Image (tube, rainbow, N blue to C red; front, side):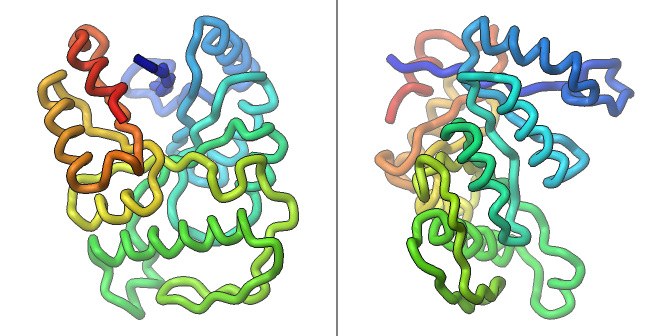
Length: 233
C-alpha cells in the first residue's frame, strides 16, 4: 500500500506571530535537510506573501535538497515560464498546488465575479500551461480570460505537460475542473470515516483514474482504514 508523507509547514513562532517556516532561510535549510533525511517525500510551499515569494522559496528549497519534491502553491495569474524553468533546474521535483483565488478588481469591472467564473479561469489557465509545457512550436490563443500570441516555452521541464498538479474543492464545478487537470486531489481534513466517504464521493464525481486521493487528518486519528482510503487509486 503506497503511502507518501508530505510536510506542511506551520508557523515557527507563537500563534500571534506572522513569522513563517521559511522566514530565516539559513535555519530553514537545516530543517529541510532534516525533513528529507527522516523520510518525507514532499514539502508544501504556501507563504502568505504571495506567488512571487512562493516561487523564490521553491527555487531555494529545491537548490538545498536532492530528493524532496516541492509542492508550489499557485493560482491562475499571469502566464510566465518561471514554473517550467524551476522544473528544469530541479530535475522534475516540482509540482503545482492550484488554489481558487478570486479574480482581480480589474477583472470585476468587465465581467461578473463568481464561483463558476473563478474555476473557468483556472481551467483555461491550466490548459494554457499544459500547451506551453508541451508544444514544440509557438501558438496563439484567444479565450475568455487569456490572450496569447506566439506562446512558447523553449526550456521545458523533464515531465513536460505531465507535471503533477494538485487541486481540491467540493462544488460540482471544482470537481469537474479537477477531473480534467488534477493528478492529486486534496480532501478536506476529517476523521477516517469522513475521509473515506469524501474519497468515495470524489471518485464517483471525478473518475478514479484521473487523480490520487490525498488524505489530510490529525496523525492520532489515522488508523488502517484511513491509510487504506488514502492509498486507493
